[in-house]
Length: 319
Image 1 (cartoon, helix red, strand yellow):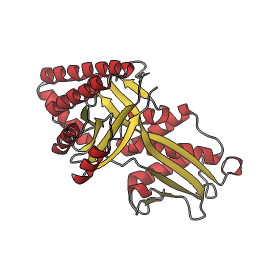
Image 2 (cartoon, helix red, strand yellow):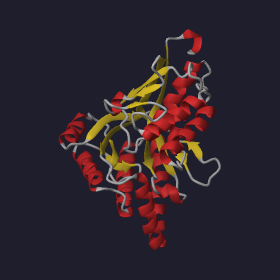
Image 3 (cartoon, one colour):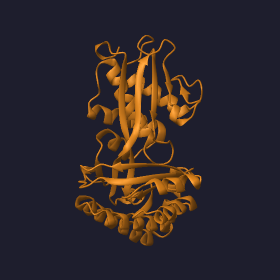
């Protein structure tokens, strides 16, 4: 039952971008991840035909049931798990319809599964009348992320839950620490279809690293230094410096072999249309590029659409 007899319950969560350090973070170097000003929102209402989950932004036919009917296996399993975690485990309690919407596309490296998990849990918790605490969301969302990714790093759902900007370093305690952002960071996010799954990109880079460990160690060290310089640029509000570091980070990711032709084309397109810098974000092999655009984003957005790419303008907010 919804809290106080409310006719609906809602929850929201932001997407995320890796500003610096993807892939090198697997090898112990720091990564900087930030919540986007764009994400997903969930609305829960009573539905006698429920439980059912509809995500119109991801396609007209994305209607999911926890028993797996209708396809979308991972979404179905995650929906079933979320209902259980929220205590909606009786036939009467499960008569709900959930609509998930927003401008965050799936499968392009923007933390869509984490935003989905956090928004869904927040809405279901409000519906049952016992909202989850942030600590409970962190634990429950991690469980849902394992449905999607097997062994997630934890970065995505932590940023989706806590917001802001975080420095992550594997093997360090605590693994996460806040990063100060002096001024909003205006971004255009452009994306292309994935040519390779994220897991394939990680495994391919691992094979190249194992063949030439000393060479890749130097590349990863340089990416780590860029991440630390990025923290300083964010704290100082130095957008030109931040843009320069974006492009340097992208060039090193190209050297690692994780940037696709589409990633490189989007970075070049961004630079041609006023971006101070641009880089792939996430695993690479297609997916998303972030471009730092302090002026009017419309010329770049139009150029992306004309080139057959998806794109939207957003920002990372000051903290």
